[in-house]
Image 1 (cartoon, rainbow, N blue to C red):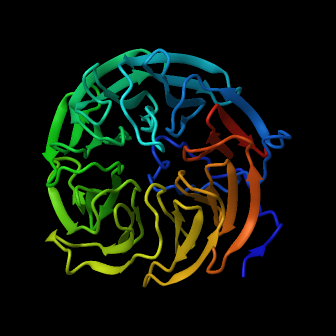
Image 2: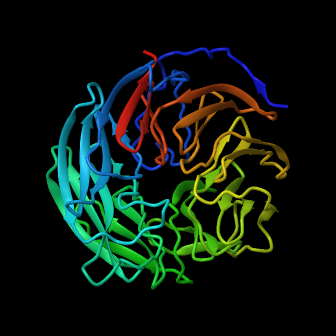
Length: 414
């Protein structure tokens, strides 16, 4: 039975964090902050500190470092791909830079032409887009992956082509920063690759071919496992861990499906996967394997949640999954027991975030249902933004940032 509580959790002002890339500081949708907003209303303006119109359209998430917010968009009328910088205190749009001008590629109805979330190291911001010409890209014909770097004043530092890219569903790659490298996933319907660029020059440091030539849109998750840093991701009809310094593939699990979008999450013993298309899976992969661990390291594997696009989250030692169809799921990560499922909205595109023992499920219609991270379904709060939302939310310095189809919202209870 679905319970509803109206209590407000204790809030403090500690543990303030930046949100510097896809899914935040740790790349997994978690925040250690203890003052995250839980109530807002877009129509009345309750706890809406500011909102700013974003030129163009896009599904990329905002990233935040200090007093700067970065996000991308596509101005379809001008056929330009744009990077924007917003002042986090005032919501003022500080500058917009044209990254490239290119004919519009074909996209899936749930994709856009500015879907890749930027990444920042506090000095520069890194973006990726798809470049095509008049004869490619409209129906999945090959174009090129473009990666660029800009400083905080909007000066372009470099702009390079990494390799070919082809997909009838369009393009989405979110860069990941590790030491002096920018990692980008080039899984597509052609000669796929995972690549690392020099952060200061854009030079390709390594480029590892993928086994299969199949489109996927997964952002690598960086984690240290038994003293070894790994970039772990699904795609190319498998799940695999890579050495981020050399690009060497360390281990892999074959399958469980063909196409992947959701990023993975991790605890002290396992990586957790939700996927995909044409079949749907939730899976736990144990740490410590080498080479092919398909038969040895899959601890549990179920297929009773149809989650394709939204990435899951771990909270209070439970695994929460957003089913694209608008259904929330909770699994016990120890054994895969399906603890509960509840319909919360018409459809989910945004990935999950968590803070203070609460899990935020944002539906495409702009309603965010906040659930207790518990073994039974407990609704903590439901908030209406009044604008459709396809991008994943960001948490930083006690505030929540939601990108709607027309505006960027800063939600604050300060």
